[in-house]
Length: 253
Picture (cartoon, one colour):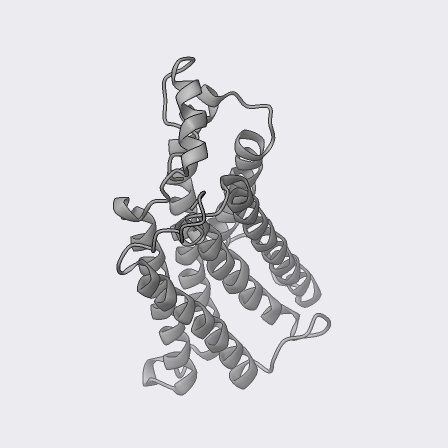
């Protein structure tokens, strides 16, 4: 695209998968809103509805935005690596802030109602996902965004960064599934087994969370859909090749 030629098209199928992921993601958010609005009284920061801020923020931050941040390198294939990287970090950062609001909401809600904290499997998995996600973000910024890290250090850390990126996304979805189940058993344990509308809607939300995870996971793990290095990145990496072993800085992340 350097000489005015149009950039090469995205690989066949990639755009369709990304479109399906976004459709699923928006449907996820709408379904979460419908569940909380229709059956749980809505969302408010103060009073008895404060708890409902929690599921909304976690689905928005730890699933939808985290998933979209992971897709950045697949979608923006022909933009400068630095701007793509900045968007990747920014979306993950936004996801963390929204998730933190959701975590504060549940702790405050528990304190108001005198409910104990951090005893359930959901809370253990969810807190582990959040803390590790924050750590992953800090390490990612330190290694890839700030200028300090050497190329060889980056290439050694990168496979771990990529693996834990997908692993923490999966753990986040698992924590959501546990949270949905816990919420249903707390609120409608007597009628859940009778296929009441709230139970069916929340179960559907869970299935869609899994579907979103699978579509995003497929896009991320398909080798021929990885971001190709741009010409100038390849030229830069040739200089590095004489200095060190490891993947080129332009290699698809």
